[in-house]
Image 1 (cartoon, rainbow, N blue to C red):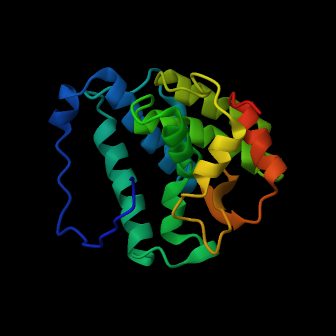
Image 2 (image 1 turned 30 degrees about the vertical axis):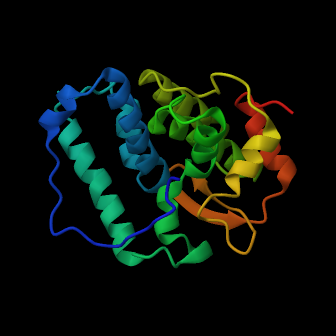
Length: 217
């Protein structure tokens, strides 16, 4: 039932209590970092490279974390301000915040909620979104190893834990909120830090993406 009911009410302020992060299990913190990686991939190559250049994976007490959280919040606020109700269509707008989520939500649904934390499913979804971008002739092969290494450094999955069927995953994607008039839209990248929306992707390319992360026919 995720995302079936939407509401729009912008906050007067955002309170980010970093002390709360110390109360989280390590797995939950890592799942949250998948969303930080997402922001770098969709709109801030510098943020992505900063994460990549860190000698060790960040933890709740890392001095660099507050600034990174602020950058992520700023990216989201800017995008939402420009497209509060996700009306921009293929121009991107708020839909860009769903990079990796079309695949990730399908993984959560088919595998069964609880099999993956949301951020873990998104991590695999980010790999899928990057692979689809590559199959469309975008991004570079060098960037793939950067993404895989970065996600792995936070103990995030880049492959499905157990194989699931292509048909089930593809069907689940059509429950995505970005489906318009029965046509599935994807968020892909021209390059790291430069995301855009696309529709009309050939089904064989989507199948290749799913197969690359462990799905079966």
